[in-house]
Image (cartoon, rainbow over all chains, first blue to last red; front, side, top):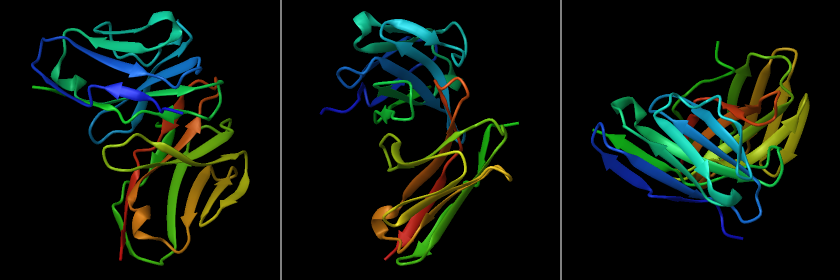
Length: 113
Length: 111
């Protein structure tokens, strides 16, 4: 089966611009998660979708971040406007059930300059 | 206080050595503990998980949880250069919908 696909793999944008990250989960996985790793820090939870509904978005840093999941398939994470502190690696993961069996994507490395 | 604390290393060992990677966690209610391996420019990949206390063995890898001391360990026997990666410990939140990760330990196995 195809894994979790994220793109772009890298993005360099200027402060104040908008960036949209995309995640395609494993087909049939209802649960989709976004995590972020800021340099030197641990990977931290951003939010959790079950199908198209946001189950938990307690990790979203602020209202500059907007996540959507169209029709319970792929998901996008938009940062608008981007700030320097948003730089990091954004990981998407999916799972069939709410259990430990996540599959992570390779991540999108975002650099805000 | 962080949910999971992990020594970032780096750790460098000769091929064939036994490697011990360790983490501590803060909440005694946590029940699921995982070890992920992450190669450069890749996402974390689940290596092992344990439930509650005890040991779990899979080939050259052994995961151990000591709930009395809130300590989790990963042992790698007969380490190989292909084991060179960052190892992340994690625990599942009590709500079951997010992981708390350690910062990761960078391991290099020298041929």
